[in-house]
Length: 423
Length: 100
Image (cartoon, rainbow over all chains, first blue to last red; front, side, top):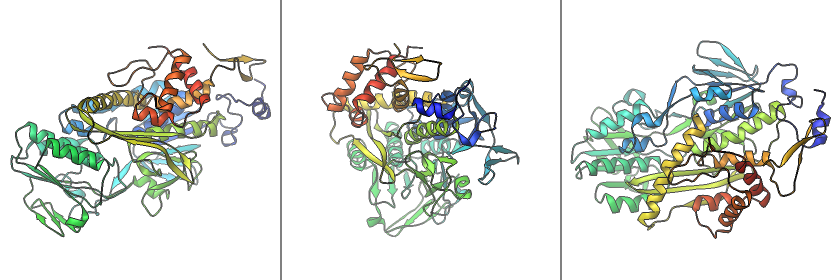
């Protein structure tokens, strides 16, 4: 085909399949995109780059596991509303789009050579890299706790065996037993998550006749996501079964003792808990930290116009690992950011047409059967960050019909969303 | 219906009619919609299918959400920043999809 870059530009609209406008790939058979991390950010990015480039870009998704259990709706598994298989998804359906799966751990990123070094020492060269590693837990952020105690005091903040462990432990809590949740400081994955989790624990306790059991949430934050909605629901459905304690009351989380299931705060010591759920402070996944992509916050600054790393224009950072301005760390956010990144990767590598970035998020939370609430918004790049253009939140005092409809929406969303990410 | 056609030596895409939306823009904007609305046309209680609608009806519904004459928190929020051209583009794209 005889066409040059000037003609394409003069025509105003370039064909996505024409790689001629992309200096990064001149002299190379096919431009290469590598995606690290098979969560909602990475899997979406890999799918959309491959699907929309129709074979013009070589896409490799690097993810060590062969199945992904979603953190979103893992609280519904805890509450007995879902089985574990229904929140677990494979990657095989991404292959027909042209995604090549590499089930290894990505160890490091060699930014100078533009290569990803895998666990077996092999290297994957890239023209553009998408980094979507999720979070790592700061095991030293709660004194007395650590990775060696995550079986005793589970976090269940990465879905999988920890989620199943937490459910087993919840099911074993006796009537009259005490559950202590150590909530995380900002910023962390899934802002409403701890409080939906508490709601689901309460639902299980109440529905199995264990109404003398009690949950204490010891929170390092002054306030939390959807606070008025959760507290209204707790009072309505689970009176006397839960107490949320902020830092002005507890005066600091001093330590935990996994041997005696004790949580010590400046105000009170909770001994002999039947279950302690420690949700620690978090950082971007360590591969992002080790590659120098994070700042002093432990998360990675990005260009809000395109999701590129502020440190490296060949790298895009998605989801929980990035600093996304007003967007929360949620699967929905990661999926939204991935679509912007995928478009920009195609723009860089094939000269495909790009459009101004737009982002969206919604987070649903279930409080009790047929009573769900939501928070979300639309977002755009503004003043150097991803800024909220429009936000919404459920209202206290909504009718039962509205809440039931919100839960129906929540379930329908999950079905559509995992199809968008994994199928 | 496709509002774009190939002309000349196959180099350029040119709008065929003023009324038709920009399909490429619509396809990009649609990526937000398909986080909740399945593009294969399957739907569940709570989130309807939005594919294959007549363009004028699709745009009318989006405008009603933007004007808040039709209420839904998520749709009111997401449509608040959509221009008429964005809505035409989305109508063009989703209107071209058929149930799988």
